[in-house]
Length: 172
Image 1 (cartoon, rainbow, N blue to C red):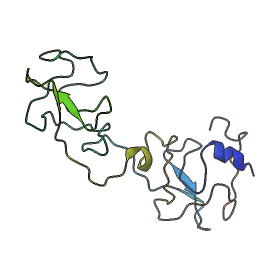
Image 2 (cartoon, rainbow, N blue to C red; image 1 turned 120 degrees about the vertical axis):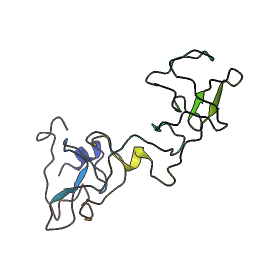
Image 3 (cartoon, helix red, strand yellow; image 1 turned 30 degrees about the vertical axis):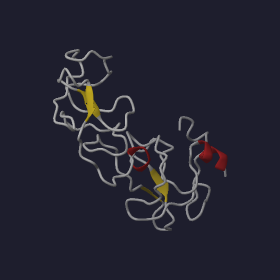
């Protein structure tokens, strides 16, 4: 068994992964009746609420905590600033790793302020608990399939023998 190949693809323990370009992360199961299955991991969606520092927030709040209207990101009036790539309209964002989403204001006396955006509460971080695209970059710790089965350890060949070799999957 080429267990070192699986480790190179981050196929450690029994965590869900997508080493071969399936439509989403998957694993071999510990059930002798089900060889493999897709994993119970949600697809990352644009965030309409804040988790952590709000870098992923993509909602439409455009008013600061004190009630000031946000300045359009592509406008230099009333406050001049470096244009932030990809920011549109006047929605609150966190393009520079502040502690939460913010915006430049239309108030000439207040350059910028934090925004009051809805909190996601205890929603998991999108970097570890959801997958983007087809999940080939997913590195979370989910190890359960959508059918509720536990994942088989990638280094194990029982109950399901598998052959994921560099020769069989040269572009994995």
